[in-house]
Length: 404
Ligand SMILES: [Zn+2]
Image 1 (cartoon, rainbow, N blue to C red):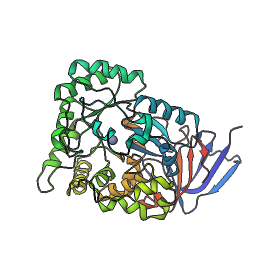
Image 2 (cartoon, rainbow, N blue to C red):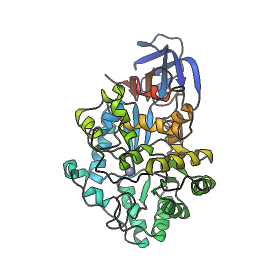
Image 3 (cartoon, helix red, strand yellow):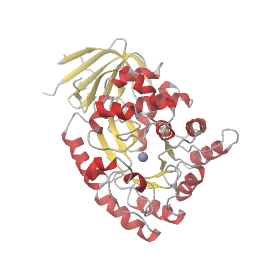
Image 4 (cartoon, rainbow, N blue to C red):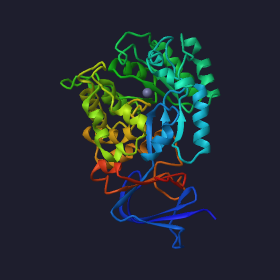
């Protein structure tokens, strides 16, 4: 008989709305309707809230990251660039083990030869990541788009990621895909049944992605002047095309060295769960980073405009082994989403049901009978105070309760 766990008298945020008091039954790997029969384990949920497992809609997975993510209640990560050998290993780990977050991935992203993020692959300190970094297949012209997408399908990609960035993130000019190549890649992805998701951080690059007909943007843009209407104009265009946007506000904090990025490191609820190497990464000196001083303000401004325009915002961090940190970063991202004008409930939806819907993850992201028992139990009420997500008591992945 599968193990049955009953969480009693708990506040339930089901991915869309809140029920102040209910019982939630975990029957084996799935959520079930409470039936009055005794459970093997009963947990008092009073004063606590149960949430669907969090889904980080933008990460980069290296060894150890999926385990770290799960301790923070992130039960699924949507990886946006992973080399083939590393991807095969992470997939195997996610399938075989119950103490790690689940994974979807773009595999190798599409970029111009020498284009973003080739420069990061060659950066100092990356060699320690072994076969997870190195040279990768690129796209020189539109004629290569179909073969590139076919190769991604063969390596098991769940969607296509396309980088459109002539050096904004790196601070030095880099080769970038032309609009015709981006359009050919999107068409090839759609013909193969894959969604196309673009990395673009400026309005100009986002317009190339929108012209090409992408399904999603992997970042908000951070270059719109808060004093004019550019962010609203872009948001209106994104809304009209039915495109979703992954927020990655904590990514902009990280690349600009914004002091807010260190805030989670001062919160014992987060710090105490981090392995030593991640604490060292989180405590890093950000003075040496290239600082786009308006970066975080610009990204928040864009997120506000997108939210006002009704664009689906998906919580995502762009987590790496450096910054933002896997798992921990999501709890910072959710605070930033509330600063962008989302209510705590809208923020929690952006971290659960909304990414599940846009990525076709029909078995998770909500609390309902028959869905995967990917759950997080926290102390307090994050539907009122979003930082209560950090007070993690228990995490279940596919019905397996994680030891603390
Ligand atoms: Zn990324």
